[in-house]
Length: 586
Ligand code: GTP
Ligand code: SPV
Ligand code: MN
Image 1 (cartoon, rainbow, N blue to C red):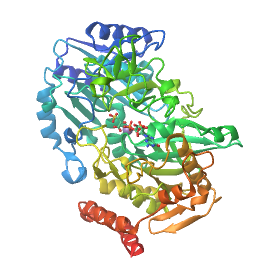
Image 2 (image 1 turned 90 degrees about the vertical axis):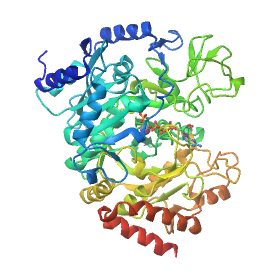
Image 3 (image 1 turned 180 degrees about the vertical axis):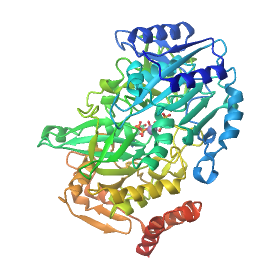
């Protein structure tokens, strides 16, 4: 195999800095991976689970201080601070290389350095992009093997090109005070140190496929978004695709693998999963938007995943998967988490590896415990999953966790109004990142933690893209999380969300009318099908669809405050849409 000189130089420089004992190039061959898994079993980094019940599956525990993305330690390192914008943490690239270079210096002493060539998107597709991740973690190697396409075939596709993202990761000492997740968009480079948690160390995912890719997309005229992609097949056999952006732990994996309510299944409805977290979107030659999922697996939230809420996700984890920070059931050497079933194991260890029973009152699995499962395992994986050009989008959906303000669903008046709707998204924070949970914060397009440049410029990019799409998808906003006065979710959610998807697709085909409100079009309550739903009446739907002007006037204040930090860089179109909204509310 001829080794690309650029890759070789990157590996040599990284080795000179990190000073590993030896270097192993990951070929992608099963024999090599199996050897690494065996090495990880010997050190306890991986625990082999029951081969009959969970063939090829492993349990992993991350350090107790290292269980989620660390947004306060994540930086965009570009020359000009304004180019990172007011939402991102910024560090001067030179300072960052020096400061964090000192932490990498000798960080792999006595360890093996693994070189992982990987492709985001099907190998060789013209929409795919290549990365090289250097790491001292076997967990990272075996997880990247699930989440991306890795090995020699990727180096072959790269040829002699210098067009690859350089990713350097070291667990170092897992010291939380020296943990840094750095992005150098101008150098196509990612540095991650002192963490072993997925979102911080599987560099193909958030670091590359969103932060670096969003910057590339801005410059090259495409979009990298925190979106699931799914296809809804109707009884005639036609499939329409939608992409949906919800913040972390707000329901993307669940929606992406939705199982229609029985009534709909009988009629012939089916949902196909193309992706559950990230979409790379381009304008096709036919003037429509086309989306690919650059990933090859799912890094999904474990708690709450069960045979009722998301059977397709659970079934995806039944072989060749890795579970991180869940309960270890010692009776049958399997795993468990809160919300899997009503039978917590008696003889078990919690996510920290301590003796645990449900009776102790503490959660056994970490709220951000996760499974890493190959996409091919998913019973509803789309036939278009590997399609090099992806799938055409009929609709784009935004959504978040809002106890009140946002109705179950509404439609934006046009593309720019849709960009406005995305830009004003807010959601209650979750355990997917460290910090307080349940606090409402602005999370535009679910990209707050993931835009690799100035968010005002990101909004401008959305508006500019609108001008290039001859056949624009309609844009909607959904909220599955509206609560009653007792704090209970009003909408049943999960599979029943198909009822809302159906309204959305009917709108895209002009099959159903809607009611104008200050924020956009909402359904007539009778048009949300509630047949077969227990305890949901037309009045419930009416309640879910109300747009309370008083709430929205408060909301406008929050939007103004949020927008104010962008100054003149905020696109005038959005300022205009905000003024429109204010006028309509009065
Ligand atoms: P990331 O992987 O962090 O990006 O998360 P995600 O957006 O894929 O979220 P996921 O589908 O894993 O759901 C997170 C949590 O939301 C789980 O606890 C689900 O049970 C819950 N959830 C998902 N869909 C619904 C819904 O329709 N209604 C309600 N009430 N909860 C939901
Ligand atoms: C998210 O937090 O949005 C995730 C998990 O999908 S992580 O890979 O940690 O970012
Ligand atoms: Mn995510």
